[in-house]
Picture 1 (spheres, rainbow over the protein chains, first blue to last red):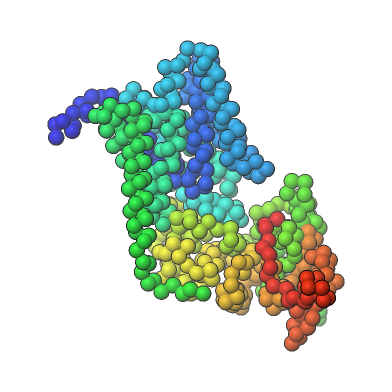
Picture 2: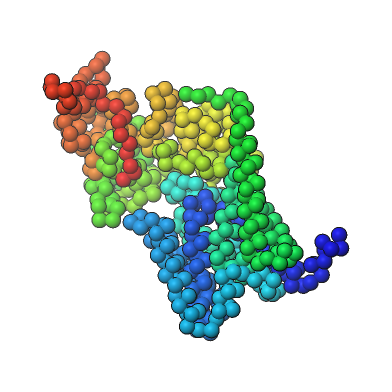
Length: 281
Length: 284
């Protein structure tokens, strides 16, 4: 028992495991909407865009967090606007806008001496997080949870059926913008934990696991949050003992859980359905 | 109906026309540079039961959305009665059946205003269950929407619309992509709702199976070509103007039957085929 609790003696580890737990829960919450809107690729794209934003900010002697957030929000709004025009699909819009911003980041990194910083942003360094980082992630998690709590019904309706939601009085453009802000904030504050290359995995895998386990939206939301938090906790804990990169270990933990959930779901679906008295016309 | 000031045509002596629920006056809508509706006049009153027919891209769905308030006209005006509540039932073919949502959750989506808490109150759940029971879906509230039959799925979305306690119910292609039995069930349900006092507007491609049986139809092809009882409106001339193709209209037991003429591929004159729901409309 003493051995199992040993890493908790170190402050850096306590910060790391707390921030990983919060990051997992936050990604699970936001990712549920991202996955159900069929925009899993947006997490991948935005994480690349915020890298460009952080690099630009550092080159201009600004806070990388502010640069990443501003560029993340701008990219999310641009993607939203371009994809609504329908002449270019959302996937193509994400590909163009975020790749361009990522290329800007790479160009800046290559002409300056920021290779260490770029490694931290690209691959994450959870063991180097400070109390300030923990508070930032906690703040975004609380704010996102509050938005989802207060706008749960509108967000659900506009995710499931945006056309009828609009007819029923939901301002779907406003909901889309709100979601873009939450997503950009999430990616900005969590990029130091799992790295921009792996954030997309944390936005997608926990909601997909949850979807495999339930047919109900509110249960999916809870399971996704819990799964994300569990992956963060277990991944960082294992990375301490295995001496693997923390971001990769978190994602590999999530992937293992996905495989388990997939097997369980497949076995469950092979059982004959109970007679529920549904008339077949 | 305080906001409607336009003078309506005078009613025949002794008949009092119900108050208009909504009046579209020379409404023009467009998507991009493409006009979808042009100078559309349409007045809907309490108790109306109207079918909108027309070819794909004729603006049927846009007209429904304009009535519902989801599309704003670039010209003309839409005047709604004070506190008019509208229920909207989308085409089931546009629904994502793999979305993780139970029947009750789908119905409760109608409750987007008022209560802010994510979870529904016991009163809301009771209302949803009551709406489901009224539509013959008792006990299916916890089922996933994919687990229902085609007719039941359609009824779920009617139940969602009914939870808004509408005076006007709009249905976009309610029988699109369903079999004959389900179409019969769905139309039976819609007629029942009409008998309970709802004004109903639906779009359909099915001239013989549905439109011919409605009290009133509107032939639309970006503009209103004709409106009236099927017997008056379903004529070769009106249908040719609406669809841009020759259609023959026969009479069977006093009912109009629209037939399509195909060239005989075997070279012996034309084949006359009664017109059924043959193609699906894309929302314009």
